[in-house]
Image (cartoon, rainbow, N blue to C red; front, side, top):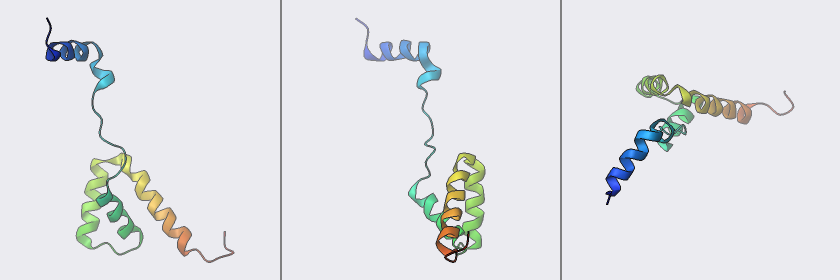
Length: 82
């Protein structure tokens, strides 16, 4: 009788690329907080440097950073201005 491990090994050998783990493309709460501080102009130089390294290593998170900046703009835009 095959062990569970043998079954899993054979399955991964056949379908490995389709079932490989992936890093979440959603930033964690610490990253979101850092993006918010940056968007609000309140990030320290150390936090800005950390953010640069973070988005450099996770370019898929740039969209989340851009969204925070966009939301900040919308909150501070004077009413009646496009």
